Image (cartoon, rainbow over the protein chains, first blue to last red):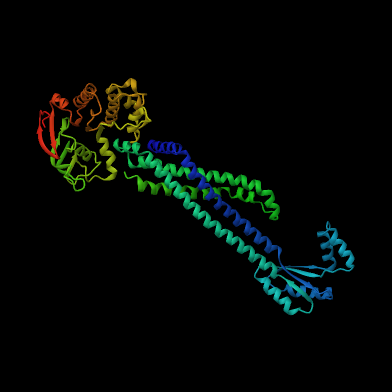
Length: 300
Length: 227
């Protein structure tokens, strides 16, 4: 036990002795851990955005102006028999106009041009929500083929391509981020490795005296392992706190942008899991690099 | 206690540094190992503390075969052999006290024991008032005393001294040799002293083993330095 404490103390002393090298290791570890953490946040944000778009988008069937309300209600009834139709909302022409006016209330030009047109240019529509995304296409096809004479256009493909695009963008970012953090972690590994290697060289005399007076292998090697672990520990703690501040600062604008999704709440709510992950990655990189450096350069 | 059996050590393709040497050192014996530089004295001592392995032959410490020792047993072996050198091998950034305590720390001694043993050995070598001095503040003789104190903390069976007086003036050299002789007489610790200091060897009137070009050429109970 006393040996254990002495090893840890010696490791901390060694960390301080090469403080600039140690800081370089810690810094590069922080950068790679930050990218990794950003990836996690990006993941949940993009999941949220996709889910949000999915819940918002639906199949909108716009009807020609001459379609009567009763025939539209028939179609609605017809559609409601589908298992995977969750809900259908009927928006009459008047209501569509009212909503449009409300949305653009502060835009003089639009309101004025509406007044100039005189009559209502908008179409009545059915907004259909399906219980699963895959059903949209079937519903759209059904409406298009069966009621083609009443329907002006069915609007669903645009959102489908939007989701596709979003997916491909987030997928690209995710891959690039993974590659970047992989490369950076490797660089961090090399820097940590080199730090321990130099520490071993600079402690040559001390190590030879340790051997001379009968220090156990564990005692000679332990401090260098402690140094590596310490670097990982420091880097993951700094990264964790950094992101705590970052998500807190970015939370208001992001929440506005993401229709109420709060990244700080997510980060805070998953603090333990995220910190454990950061710790694990940081410590594993630190430990692995020291272990390999010790095996290579510190023959006992 | 210590036994060399037909030990040969060859570095590369040169003539062997140690050539088929056999001798034993009993418990409590004081042996001088003499010969010119390069005669093989240091090599023999290195083999005993397992810093090197013999090309052939055996080295025993008690019942331990030093060559075939497992890595995990090395620290144990080195605690049974105290070693001192011409260049002292002290840590420059530690005081005399800390240098000695270090030997105990690395072997897992309790803090309480360290506080007890270190002042004892410091007193034994006559440096109780220099405990807080760093090596650079000590004279050569004092540094060697610290090294001897450090070698003593594990109560070794044998102390090997490789030219311990090589950097010291004659008077200081004698102080160191007398200290070793006293440790040998009082504590019963075997001592193997490698030296080429003729006067010291002749005055000691102890066993002398003479090496020449790696070969053991003389082994006398009350020997003199003859080459």
